[in-house]
Length: 505
Image (cartoon, rainbow, N blue to C red):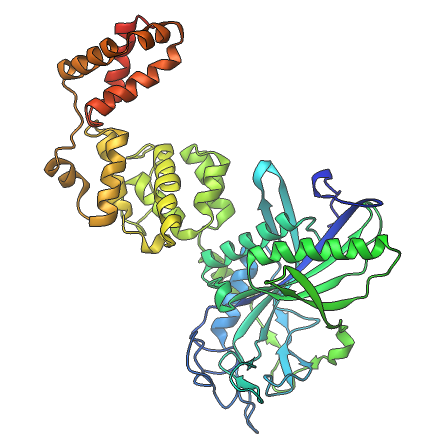
């Protein structure tokens, strides 16, 4: 899909504007206990060569046996990408030599992949929406890892990753900026995490991207592309694209030509550098693997997998906006991770995470907008500050829901609620019991509140006169009264009394 260039996505050069065109090949490790063609473990972090079967080491006479669970995971991912599932597919041998590729070839898929065309919808800040076409998803086995820093003269080889199942998800050249590319990979990772088909841990190599970058004048035919290999960070993806696009523009504006090649991104310098000339498909001498029969699926098998899919981010986002009345931004933040969405719903519904969501629309225990505000600002803010994930949150959904229930009942003010949240975060406990034991119950005695209001006005006569002319200043007086009452006064009661005392409509 060749999209019209957005003005904001064009890159200015010395001789005019340029458009960057980006296609991506994302390699996602299949979530599975065993490898694609052997029973060896896929656990991360084992001692070198401790998760290697005779098949992975390519011992003579060893034959691959397909792991059916990996097949199902690829199909589920394809369904999540709204893609065509090919009932007939073939495994091929892709021939090339690496020291950490024991067979001398990789078992992959070429002309007949397991998943065909699909799409990913990417929503960006500002309301921009990009539909990224998926060309294909195919299964292949990973190579091992060469270790060059263990000995001054020799390189070592670790085959723990050899044979691990990978899904290679190939996009069409529909991306037009580094921002779009980052958002696309983020969305792709989110979908696979919802499906539990890939954990998306880029720092462990579970998700990495090859980025094809070219530039052209807006409206002209596609330029020569360069491929940036094995980028393992969303931030680095953006940096690599921006540097490579600028590098190509500089060459073209100086009258040079882009050479199709494979490049690497250096995170320390923020630059790409040449690795090798780009191979073409014929260089790999693909042919059907003679040790594996064609893979034949039934539609009933695919339908059964489709029936068991969870609610995915786009559907959940639409439901959060429609049923909960959330803004698109808040919905986007909450559905980005399945655990975050589950946490929010548990707070809004007043139930344990993982229990049924079959509650009537609008039948909420907590105002969903209040719940979203607390989850996004208070909870996520604290988690980010301390470098934690939501699954490790010291405050459970039940505890946060209990805090918001106390606000709803008028037992505590919003300010006191933040103090209670901090106590629960650091000490744990039942919010209601904490409020009672520490004397944090909201002050609703109108006589006591009126006394504090009168004292605040009497102590600040000049500001009281100013507030009569400029009612917005009443907020300052609210702050003074709340301070005087230790944050316990009902803000609504304080506002009402101040307006009465100052004669503000």
